[in-house]
Image (cartoon, rainbow, N blue to C red; front, side):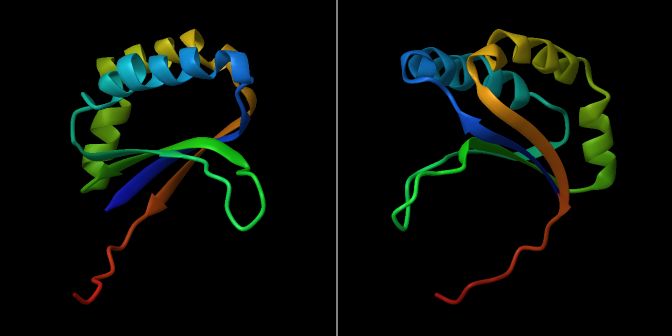
Length: 111
């Protein structure tokens, strides 16, 4: 299994958070959810922990069963649309976006 993660390292100014979050949830992620071959999609929001604020405002996690599924998604028209949409919310973000592709192993947990 492959997992593509987009890490938003930084923050969104307080006055822009609602606009940013609404666009990501209601426009961008529905586009991403239409990628061919995508079998899971998660959005993680940074939360303070252990006395420190989060380094990441959010992260996306896209799961693919195979390299062929991943390649098909990356070459798709809907991905091109999603990439174009990034310009509608990314200017509100202050920081760096990093994309990392992982080979993923699910580890069974008891119970």
